[in-house]
Image 1 (tube, rainbow, N blue to C red):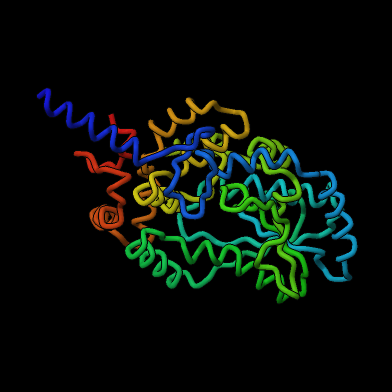
Image 2: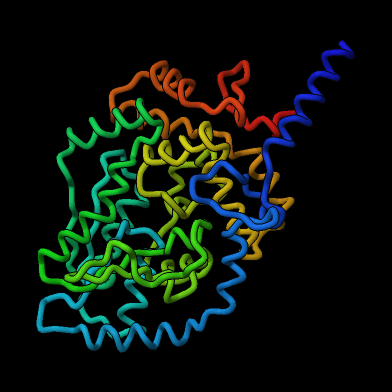
Length: 352
């Protein structure tokens, strides 16, 4: 018995040597594709400090002047790719109230998973509150579900094509309508630590349309977005009491549909993190949590796959639970995660 305990202790020490975490926020290092670090601190944390050196007022003044120059006689002076979430509401609100946008076109991508009541409300509200045109794009549903299933089974990355389309299709639509500017939310490369540059223009820009990150003009903050969005009718899951999500620590992001959360959770068996890590560590950077508090949330919840999300995903794409679990096991990174006797994947360094 004593020898078994000593062996377990040696395994824990080995896992802690292999699996490193950011000294500031606690995010797992060395596994997230593209995440850079300096001296044990992730670039996302370093970029949070860089935000303090950016002249946001100058960028906001520039945007107002830019939109005035770009304004034409067309029906829409710009476009905004929206989901109906808190960030979408905030972008539209500030474009119209702070930067003189008169009639932005809202472009929304349809989701094949089961919508939440909050999601349905928010998608309706963003157009109704601001009294704007909204076009919903829904690519061929059967083909989309086929892609989701194939990319889940072959890569454990079920929404790879869907997320690519989230950017490309709104840009193509806006461009086809003669709109020369389209806005997206945060600059993910900067916010999640794969680039030091808080670039305003996306590489997807071309000679016919400028693609801008609004989060590079107004400093992105979860608290700021939630406050602004709530002021114009955005509702969280709490408004309907419909879904107490497992594997999460908040109730106001990625709330549009059930099955979508599986895509986010699929990062856990491959890379050792999912939504709890993303949000908890962001809250540390924003001063809402301590590192110790974030690590406790990560230990307690990051491994959890919400059962309603899993059920909706499997039912929507036509998988049995057994097929789902078998696929996860094939793609799991066993140097980072281990499967316990209850078929639950856990991060090796956080298993008691």
